[in-house]
Picture (cartoon, rainbow, N blue to C red):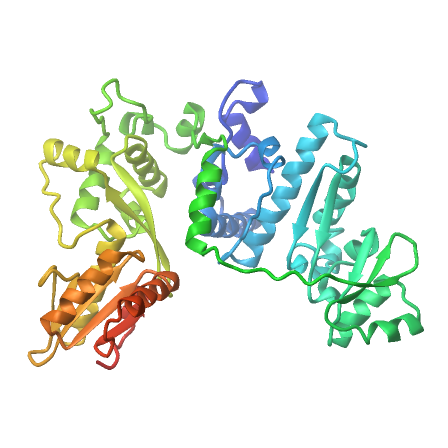
Length: 486
C-alpha cells in the first residue's frame, strides 16, 4: 500500500493533475528500486511481493501494458468472453477478481443503485474464483470476492456460476445465489454439496439421484425444488480458433485505450539522470525520420547481430531491465521494430523484428548489414534455424534455402526437405509437389500449430498427392533431442 501511494504521488494523481495512470510494471520497478536492510522483516515482504509481481508481469505483462485500459462502459455494452488460457491459477484469479472490482467501482461512480438487472457475469469453473479453500483461511478473513459479489447485487450485476465440483465452491456463493440448478452427477460428494445448498429432503434427494441426461432440479429463491427437462441444443463447431482470433482482434481494436506512459517525477525516482540517456519517445516532425537514443541504437545493433535472442536476455546488456524496456518501447513507438511471441513446449520468448523503416535506419545510420539467412518473418526464420540446428546436432549436414526449401538436410546417403508452414495455404502445397517431383527421400512439413497441420493434410488429400514420403510435425517437435525415424 505504501508503494502504491508513492507511485500515485509520482504520477501526480493525488494533485488531480491530468496524468497517465501507472501500471503493475511501474509498481515492480518502484519496489525493485528500494534498498532494504536484508536482515529486517520488511525485506521478506519485499521479496514476496516482487515474486508475485514478476510472475504476473512475466506471463500476463501485455494485459497491463497500458496507462488506461479498455473503457468499462464500452465493455458492458458488449458480449465479451475472457479466456485465461495458459496462466497460473493465481494470475487467473487476480485477473477475474480485478474485472469484478472494475465493474463494481464503475457502478458506484455512476450511482447505478437499484436500477434493475443491467449485466451478467458467467463463470465457468467457478471454483477458481469462489474457492472454499480461501474461505477456510481464518487468518485472511472473509474472501474479498465474497464481499464484492454481495455488494454488486444492488447495482444490477447478476452472476451465473457453473462447476462440476460444487464441494469446492464457497459456502457464501452456494448460500446467496437466488437460483440453483442440480444436473446429473455420479459423484456423491458433489451431489451432496448441492442438495445441502438446496436444502432437499431425503425423499427429494432420492428422486434427484435418478436424474438422466437432459433432466435437472431447479430451485428459485425460497420456493420448493421442481424437476425440469432441458432442451438439447446441437452446436456445430465450424469456426476455427484462428478465425475466432482474427475476428476478435478486429473487435478489440475498435475499443479505446491509452498506451503506457510514465511521468518525469517517476523517471527521476527510478533512474536519476535517465532522461539524458533515453529521451521520451515522440513522433518526429518527419514521419520517415527516426530519432533514436544511444541505448536504442545499442538495442537495434543487438537485434541485427542476434535476431533470435529473447527480449529478457537483451535487457542484460543494460544496467537495468527498466532501461532496456524503455529502449524497446522507444523503438516500437517509432516504428522501427515490432514484437513477436514464439511459444514452444518448454518456454515462451518474445522476439524483436525489424520493420522496413527499421532496416532503412539501421543500414543508413548505423551502417549495419540487415541481410539474413532464411525467409519470411522473424517467427518463420526462428523455426528454420531451430530445425537446422537440430539436424546438425544429430550429425546431419543442413542448409537453409537450398533447392527452394526452408531447410535441406542430408547424411550423404539420405536427403530430407523441411517446409516450415506458418499458415494453411496453397503455396505450401505447391512447394510440397515440387519437392516430391524432385525425388527427395523424405519431405517433412513443420506446421506452426495443430490447426495449420490438419488444414494442410486436408489440402493434400484433396489434391490426391501420394503421402508415403511426407511426414507432418509441429515446429516445436523438431526441438526434441531426437529427430525421429526417417
